[in-house]
Length: 395
Image 1 (tube, rainbow, N blue to C red):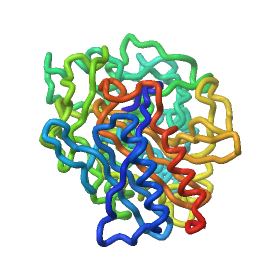
Image 2: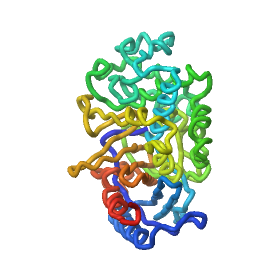
Image 3: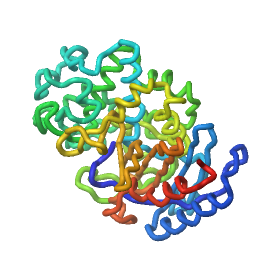
């Protein structure tokens, strides 16, 4: 899950790379560590993981700080966190694979697959929404995550262990108006990707997570990426949140002893994964590189066709298909996704100039009162990107 506008900036302190990995160039490694040390200290971060993945398969991993403040447990390589909306970087490629295989067309109306569902007739502009609109958040559809019913259920007032179906999530939209007619603006909503998940299951006859395993996790050996179908999750570090109206009732320490405070199963195709920073960086380095990606160059190009995050009109930067596209005044472009789950923040960024991806995760969110609310996690990668892009050894 991701809440636009509440994204946090953080950085990292590195630790020695695992023995089986190739060593990073010594000077670059030292510079990264010094930069991560500095930002970690300045931002009072509990703990962070960071990774870089290159086109040749080489990865560098770094950790900093604590995975549990109370027990003073050091963060370590292999520790995992919720990656929130970064999960959209897995949903969109499966849709693109289906398009390449002729199983769907991006211009298909969702009525072709879901028109018989109980919630369909109550969904404003439902007949006009296409798969394309869902992929880049131009459908205008409301955000189911803002439903009070959802959070009351999760907090134990009804059925805290409820196994939410796609239809259950869509039923939460009753009474919510769409933001605009499809194609007439831009508004981020996990709901778009819930509908895409339902389309994936309709076409495949399998669960989304089975398709994810078959098409992405197994082929690319992403062993430390796991669906969040239960609150107990291997190697999940403690996460820290704080007061926010939507999450009333969540403890400040929202995960302890590898168990989340509420069932995270609700997130599904809006996010729905825990990962290591290394797995995240590896997937970013594969997905957007035409020489390694499971997608065709044409499909990658479609994913990177950005629209403005206000108007929904074509733009150099903004949002593509399950992909955020960032840029600077020098004309440099990089892409990936950021994500939020109460207690955790994540960002993945692909740097096309060196065909490498970086990923960072932090076990606190902007509401934890431990971190600045004004900074954005994707912006704090600026000095880290500069170190990598300016290194002669990587060119």
